[in-house]
Image (cartoon, rainbow, N blue to C red; front, side, top):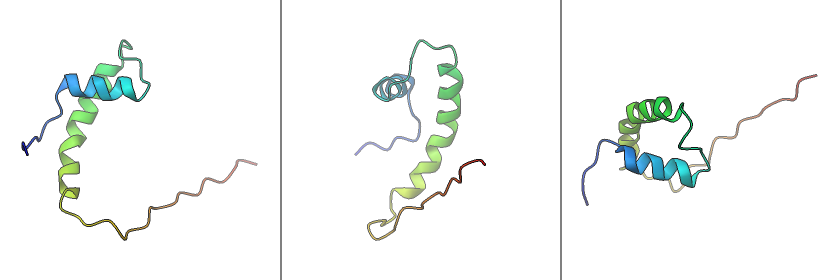
Length: 64
């Protein structure tokens, strides 16, 4: 398996489009720069066994 520490722009655009984002939006470049910076941080989770870890639930209370 290839060791990739960067997210190339072509892959990012394919993921963005598959997620329903408008890849022609001018803010997509800003989003790419942000995602490119945080992407390497996800490498730390590669070796973790998370099979028995419950997802964190977030409680959002309605505004009164």
